[in-house]
Length: 237
Image (cartoon, rainbow, N blue to C red; front, side, top):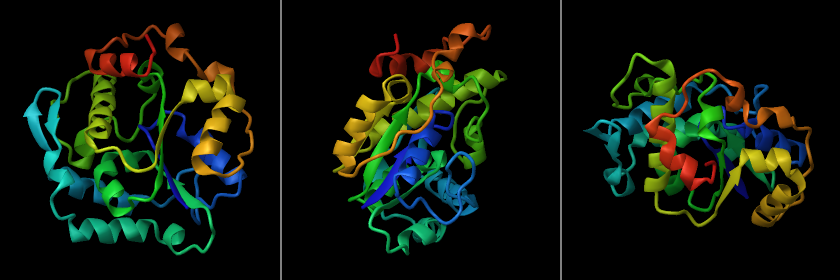
């Protein structure tokens, strides 16, 4: 079984990566403290290849349609397979990887690995954009967008872009959506859902309830229109 975790950086994806590792799932030969498979430069380069085929429609709108039908760029495949070398070559029964930037190439990952078990990990966008992340400036990955002078708004645009990209992909065979808050506040019940999806037992890990709702204590303006749909879609209103 191949498993991958998607979700924008700072979504709390390290929690499920650590859970999978503690439960005996092989997550790659080298992981950082966030549970990311590293080094990640080749996957970052793959992101820049796929982004060339994303059409910016102006404002916060993009056309992803060609990604679902075009031939996948051979260089992209080479880079991804090289990045995932330790995972793909492993003879372990249950294996996978976690790297937030995988979300940026989700359409082609689904096409390359259609049998993969995808876990989409989401967190309240207001908490998500409080901290800086590598994907804050989408242009760093070759993604066209209208950059602002407000770093927080750029993070909101990044959140929206990745959510729009996720929605645009035809639902894969195996997909589970999990809210970070549910995992933290009701880990046992949430783990049962993930166990049923994966078909393997999972171990509990230590979590901190203080990581939920941090935006409520922030003085920053966080009510950007770019995250409004996500707030409703995942019942954060």
